[in-house]
Image 1 (spheres, rainbow, N blue to C red):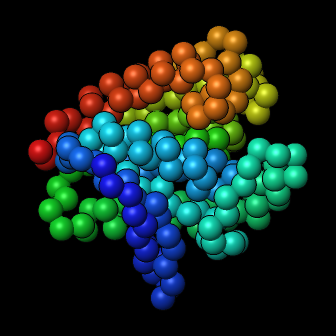
Image 2 (cartoon, rainbow, N blue to C red):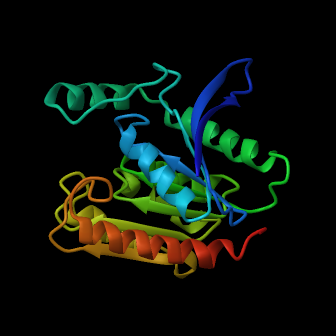
Amino acid sequence: MSEAKTTIDAGDGRGFAAYVSRPGKPNGHAVIVLQEIFGVTDAIRGVADRYAAEGYLALAPDLYWRIEPGVELSHSKADIERAFQYLERFDEEAGLADIGRVAAHIRAMPGFRGRVAVVGLCLGGKLAFCCAARLEIDAAAVFYGVGVEDHLDEAAALRCPVVLHYGDQDRYASAEAQARIEAALPPTAGGGFHRYPGVGHGFYTRGELAAAELAHERTTAFLRTALGAGNR
């Protein structure tokens, strides 16, 4: 597995960075890892590395680049406040367009003939859900997406299989919101809705190891089914 950065063409003469984790044994497919509100942090790079270890070409784009490139925040009180400030300034439509450009960048890479999935956490989870409804994406995994319940009018328009993971103690995604999301999913969603008892927000990258492992196992099984054998 090797790590690097690449620049994605923003279509207006500018470019934005994406962390790239290349698999040692490629399975032919790619995963776009969509950041939390803290930016492309060590945790997000770690998620990309984890999928690269599974054989996926993994890219984690800097979705805050239009506000401030290279944002990496901790979970200190001050940084959490800053993270919510970035979130307020984040242009969701522009972010989704950027994700589409990352997918196009991957598909244009020499020799790439596989499929492209998105894996999103927190803010990225909501974006992953929206990607599944609006973009040419082949599969989407949503980890505790905050605000998905505000986009349920798009559930019927999902273009690809989707799997969702939430802890039942998530203070940013209430039990009511989760129930609404689960109820809105069409039978064709494919991956289903998974709820983890006693687990809070952010469990995939910090704490709650057993739940994180189970969610990862479910996601990799989902991706194998949704994406197929790939171009080996």
